Length: 236
Ligand SMILES: Nc1nc2c(c(=O)[nH]1)N[C@H]1C(S)=C(S)[C@@H](COP(=O)(O)O)O[C@H]1N2
Ligand SMILES: [Mo]
Image 1: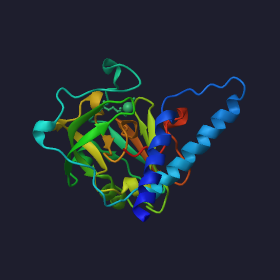
Image 2 (image 1 turned 60 degrees about the vertical axis):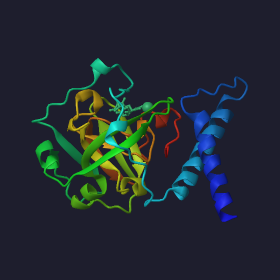
Image 3 (image 1 turned 90 degrees about the vertical axis):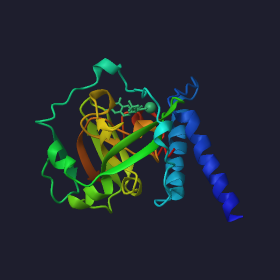
């Protein structure tokens, strides 16, 4: 009985997420009402997904021969417009409720213990790929810099103006990493150099690339697509 209710809730959460993504709901008679209704549904959906999220359940992993080649690029612009970040002068800036906000160079990040994964990447547009990423566990990094992990959100800002944010339980999930390598090599600009979030428990747009700032906060940071109506939690 409990299990059935659990599944029903999950089906409702996923079902409600789909029609929101990218849709412009236009009811000429009641535009504001429709919009407010959808936003209320999405906020409720966030709460259901957060309640269902199990911080110990791992996303499926795959074998090397299952990796998608060539990988698939996506951004709000074309592949040749991806920002090129200078590696030598790069510093990951830290903000919000973090004790030691000293910016991190790429060299310093590369010296931290690594976590590798071959996981599935799911875009809300309806395609999925399998890739290999390796980098620093976000939970390790947050502890190292003295982040207040009682805060609700971790927000990210990117070199191209993109931004996104995730809930703290998902940030502390063992498969959530600050990826430095993709397919066994340093990230390229198109795929998020020099640092991108890889979070296989969430949809593609919750995986910001070319991160320049990370902040821990209780103030809802939103996101580039989230602010245009995409469901914020977006577990996959
Ligand atoms: N900085 C930045 N990060 C981003 C995006 C973007 O436009 N800019 N697009 C998001 C979306 S919608 C997807 S599907 C994935 C695509 O990642 P990929 O190019 O590695 O497949 O990046 C996400 N992160
Ligand atoms: Mo996406």
